[in-house]
Image (cartoon, rainbow, N blue to C red; front, top):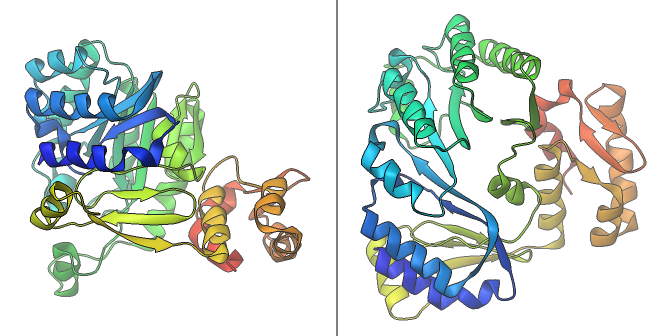
Length: 343
């Protein structure tokens, strides 16, 4: 597979010509299970076909149970300078409900091992809204994250996707449906608690200390172009979105034959402004009036100024001459507000 991924880099290297990469992200599953040789092959392909900034953010997703001293010593010799770990919860009952393999203690130990090896840029994912997660345990999850001296925390609301095993179990009554009131309470507590410990909520689900924003994800929210390599990977160039074949065999056959291994969607002007609103509202930078006028025209700007009046009156949106953003009260309703502003 890694050989095919390098071949795709070669096939698509012209898509990022004259671009210095500011971030590289090894993700989309469990790249930490790759052998040292496989990681070397991928990195050699990246450096061969793309130009990378010397201070680029290079992140690897890792499972707690994949972290070993030997693997960390290898990573220390590579350009990797940031870890993203799917902790989800430090409580075993929550992890069991989510069918996670690792234990809460495994995650804590893995974080400490990474830190002991000399890595300080670590982000963890936590999930709130779980039926098994009490408010007290949610508070303790956040307390544990603070105690581990992390500089970045991502926290996501549990979502039940249709056609998943979780969805089917809830539908059959084998598992409990998440409680909406408890979910909102946990979100609000999280925002207050993390802010009181000097974390900035720079995006709905992301909190950083000392401006240690996740550069790679921030590029997504600011609508900057990116290229995804490998099965199911997504790409964006400002005008089109593409997604690679999810079937490994189909993907490798196409790539190795020098053919496109992806499908493409051409974005309309309405797609573009709607995406700008959706992603912009999720961040502290919000939506910029001048950019809206330059990219989408004066009429779209004026229509938006009228549309947001209702939300301003209800203290859900704040607006000035430069931009409009969600208020703290509005953040919990981000998706609904964005959809109401769509064209």
